[in-house]
Amino acid sequence: MKRTFLLFIMILLPICSVVGQGAAKKRQQQFEKTKKLVDGRQFRFEAVNVKPRLGASISLVTTTNRLEIKNDSVQAYLPYFGELRIAQYNGEGAIQMNDLLKAYEVRVK
Image (cartoon, rainbow, N blue to C red; front, side):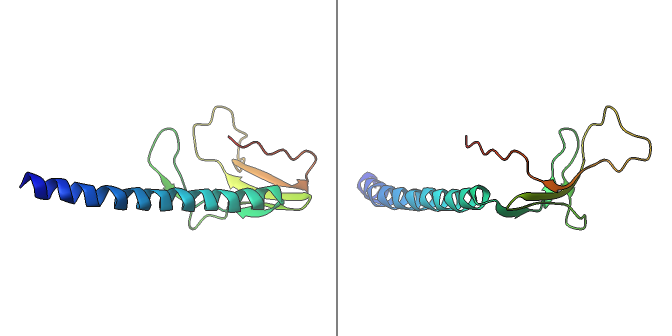
């Protein structure tokens, strides 16, 4: 019984190692693809859901929201979901932009 168990473990460990390396390689490839888009100033971000600091997750599937950068311009409409301290009366409560990029800096952590 012990011999069968040890044999099973000896066969399983190399397989798990290969699967783990494949997942790490896939994550690295996805990171490089995303980094290339951001560095090239050609990308569009659309949120699917948000998780406020307090409360449940909110679906944004039916809400228009985006951050789009094309070369030297930026367009954004990002609704705000969270704790609001100071707000304008009847304000839209969103981050809105339609302008030229003045300073574009990317930091990778």
